[in-house]
Length: 328
Image (cartoon, rainbow, N blue to C red; front, top):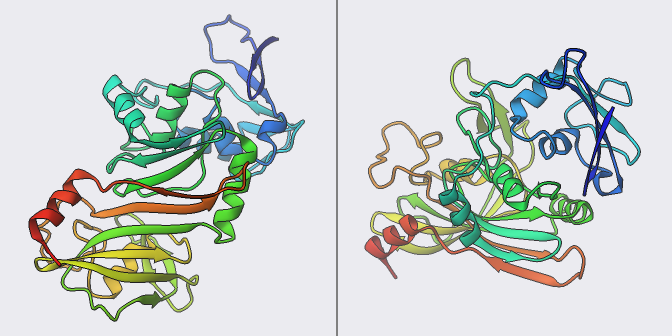
């Protein structure tokens, strides 16, 4: 059995009976740096070019095991575990595309802050955080490629593909755990800016409506207001009027999927460019892209305990819209 050492653990490869060119069984030893990490994230950083959708399929088929036992994609790993991965056959169509030089340059210029344990980046709109169906490359896969072999890069939280703005990426497992704990405990302040249809009432500063996910018979999964759903609260503030539209600030107190988008829809002021949640008949002429931006994060640095406030500039298309239509 061959061994490959890297910064985040040891990989052991069992050669195939018919030679080295066939897909092989692979074993990954979990070290202290990966203790507590989800199985899917652990494998995504090690199985280069393999999309998460294929990793999930292998887990469901029992082709991936931890200590010879069945597992789930969200199983948390323990130092000393061994993960066995059956031979993976991956087609050219399935492979995660390496980031091109233009994307790498754009991502480098989008970095707002970086130190030994984290990266803060202004994610471009239209870039998915993970590669998958319809997204041949994702933010995290691109950053792992740019970090080099054995580098540790994990998403602390997520943004929708269509949303731009500030995201945190952990470069160490202990930083990931600390930051994710703070997000879950609501110790992180998230501030968004959005351009919405109509004039947002200056007195509308809070929406508290529970949300549930629904899967229509046809089409993509959506989120709806539902009394039996999970609690969801967002604080709002009118910033400026922009012609027949408004620039608003949104501070989600909870972190539900599509929370800001659905709460804006419920207020009668859907976000411009939101084809999923804009009521039928409302004009989409002002924007073909979702005008939602994660503008600021306030959090405690995971190592130094320093109080951090980071900001991400609005994307050019939103800035141009505001300059064209806004009045104070």
